[in-house]
Structure formats: C-alpha cells, structure tokens
Length: 199
Image (cartoon, rainbow, N blue to C red; front, side, top):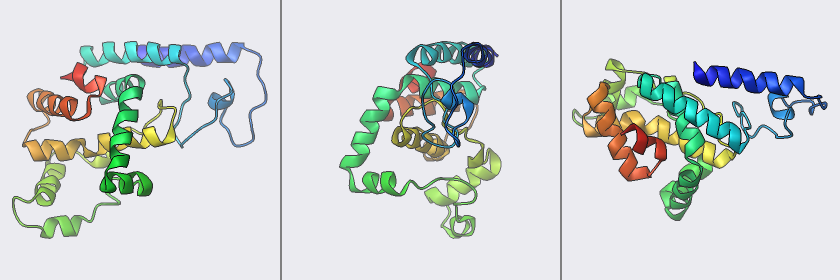
C-alpha cells in the first residue's frame, strides 16, 4: 500500500510539472523525466525515488512477508552494486556468459514439461516439475521494473526464475521456514541485500 501511494504521488508530482513532448514510442512515465525505457516493463527512477521505494517495500515486506511484489521491489531498488558483481562473475564463466548472451527465460512456455516428466525419479528436473505441480508456476514471477540497466534487469529476473529450483535443490517447502532457509542460501550465494534482509 505504501509503495502504491508512493508511485501515485510520483505520478501526481510529474503531472504538476510542465510537460515536454515525449518521443513517439516512449510511454509518458519514461518521457516525463528524460529517461528512456530500457526493456518492456522498465520504470526509470531517480536515486531518491529508489530510496523511497526501497523503504516502502521493506516496510510492507516486513509487515506481510507473503507480499512477493514488495520483496521484488526491494531487490530491484537495493541491489545495483551486487547485480553488477553477479553479472561480472557470470561473464567470467563460459556458461554464465552464454546465459547473458542468449538470455533464456524459465516459464511454462519455455520448459519442456514432457522431457522433465521423463527424467528419472530424484533428478533435479523431475523434482522441479513435482515442485511446480504442488506449489507455483514459474510464470508468477514479477517482471523487473526498477533496474536502470537492461543487462542487470535480466540478471535479477534470472535470479527470480531460479528461486524455485533452489527450493527444489534444498528440499524446502514454500512455508515461512522454507523461504527463510532459501533466502539464507541466496544471501550467501548472491550477496543481494534483499536476500540478507529477508533471511
């Protein structure tokens, strides 16, 4: 709620300023403060706006840990330096560099469900499919919005999309204890501030 109010107040503030004509294909939210959209759901923000969004998202996530949208906003607004480090680590590894170049996505439309079903019992692919059947679809992950770099936006999106694989790998359910264990694991592996705060 606090973040929604903040976003509305930012829009109101922008609407009170004299408008310059945005570029033809640039939505008003980007044209309103001279920024351009870097990817489909991008919302350009200033450092002050990021700080306010982070504070509101942190408060809401603490109040209601099941607000995945607020956890996502917190990750995007606090992880810039860590995302750069993660991207650089990926570039140093041949497989990581290939992932950055090809930018594969994990969704129901990209997963070969029949192939996962044919894998042996106990394999990561088969257990991941079982996890998805019982818990959640990978398509429920929020799109990245507040990261002002296209490549870093992909890095955090990729992090979100492998989250359920970590649940599977660690054998953790999606209850509070399971989420905390996965967040600790992610905090150690990624160093993202949101993971550390969440853990």
